[in-house]
Length: 118
Image 1: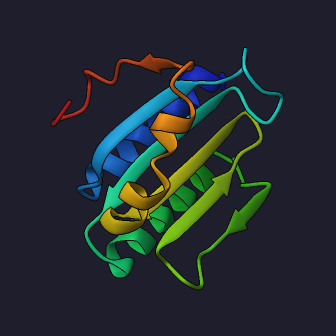
Image 2: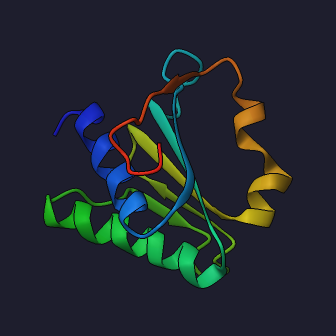
């Protein structure tokens, strides 16, 4: 699966579970960490975990497994590392506190107009 197709699938998985403020950033020209970041919020730790579970479950159905998962036990910021795409899922408060979008202002935002709330 191409990175852009995986990006769309991840965004759709987040949208399906009512993820808020879903943003995709193209960071490949700025860092060797990843090609894309996907950032989303959930209203509670339970929803953040449900968002992460939906992404990992749906990608696993396609044979795509994360290289690393961080923060699942706490549930306020879960990072799913798929090598070419890193998914950041925050509670509203943690997202506001860390403000990752501000840190990556030089990154190009990918339009996600196929999502219900985009």
